Image (cartoon, rainbow, N blue to C red; front, side, top):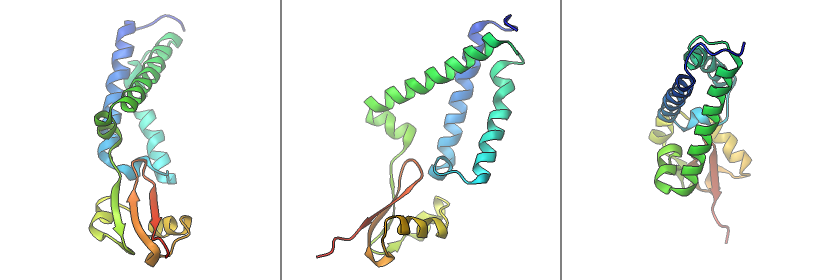
Length: 155
């Protein structure tokens, strides 16, 4: 239970490689993957965690090995959060930038399609902003996958 089957540094290395690979894959998959989860998205996340679990521990079932992996993952997450809070370049690299998806009462179909945004999500974002389509000044797909709407100023 407490005896490690692998050297301690291999657990940390496995955790770092897995963290980096998953970070890259999630980043490449687009903003909507990271946004609000659908039941399908939740299943994918659960399967991802199951799929990488053996790679993280190398078959070791020891408590110490698990704690080393968990500590590595949390440490890397803290390091990324620290770095992105202090560097705009790293923030853009890891988090991306908001994307303009609509202006002056019209959504941009090519941008909507490229980011895999459904009509229902657009309508929901308008309702949440208490905004009719003709009142929309700008619509953005935010870095966290949510859609924000800015209303036109009424004079």
